[in-house]
Each structure stands twice: as C-alpha cells, then as structure tokens.
Image (tube, rainbow, N blue to C red; front, side, top):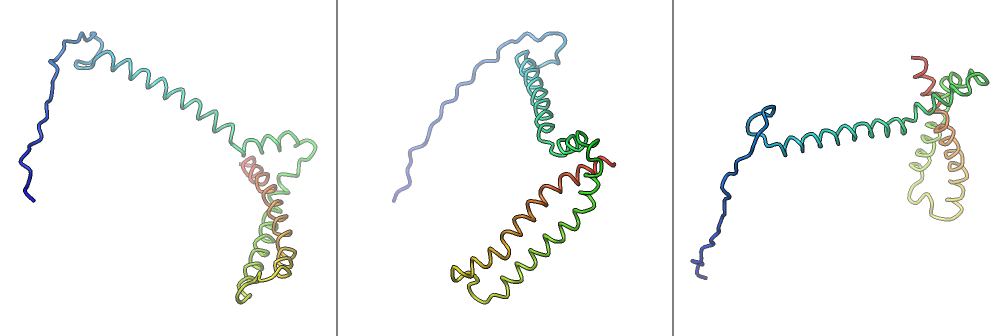
Length: 152
C-alpha cells in the first residue's frame, strides 16, 4: 500500500485586534465584560454559599436531637444522660449477638440454609432480636450523642 501524498490543508482566519475602552478604575488589559462576568460569578458563589449553609443546618441531625432534648428537658431531665450511660450496654449486646450469629454461620459446614426449616430456625433465633436491637440502637445513639454535645 502506497502512502498517501495528499496533504491536509487548514485555513485559519484571525480577526484584527479591536480597540476597547478601559475605564480608569480597571487594571489595563481587562475588558469591562470580564469584570461584569466576574462580579456575577462572585454573586452566584455567595448565593450558593448561603444556600449550602441553610441546607447543612436543615440536615444537622445533632441540632434536631439537641432541640428535642431541650423541649422535653423539664419533663424528662435525665433521659439524655441515661441514654449516654446505657448506650455501651446496648452496643455490647448488639455486638455479642452479631458475634454469635457469625460464629453460628461459620460453624455450619456447607449450606447453613439448605432447607426451609434451617432458614426459619435461623431467622427465629437471630433475625428478630438483631433487628430489634438495631432499631433500639439507632434510636438511642443520636440522643446519647446529642447529650454528649450538650455537656461540652
């Protein structure tokens, strides 16, 4: 196969420089359109920063839980501290159950759920307790954390 001798040709058109009028307060070489564009960009960034602050405040769960504890502090003054002190016990019970579950599965040689009875027994033994402890943990943890941040 013979190499092609056709050359590719490009044509470039360059516009002649145009004279722009630069106000006295701008550095030389900066067109006023750029300055306006930069001002607009800065304003948009300020608006985005303000919106992000509002969004972060709206999604701050710790603030919501602190407000929750503050609202009920007159009627239930001890709840935050009690949640904080009992959280390690609930976490330990949850981790003990998970350790028991994993040990049970590891000790099963082959298929631990090879029939309907084995699956049902496994779910009865671990499923409900693990789900309930997980739910309790997910309810107590944010209150305990909010009580920690309230104290300092």
